[in-house]
Length: 75
Image (spheres, rainbow, N blue to C red):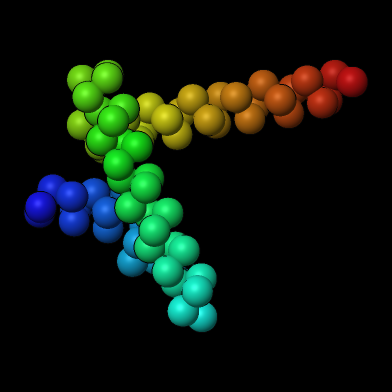
């Protein structure tokens, strides 16, 4: 349970929510929990911990965004 809580706070940024209404807060909490479960699923597939997996996903997303930017510049 402690690992789940740590991942929820660190990887899903639950503590950084800037929501104001109860509905948006509930949605934010729900989606944060879903994100942690998806990370757990990917963790078992790739044999990585949550933090290494998050870094790998971040690098891949940045690389993809850079490739898209280069394609738009060329057009």
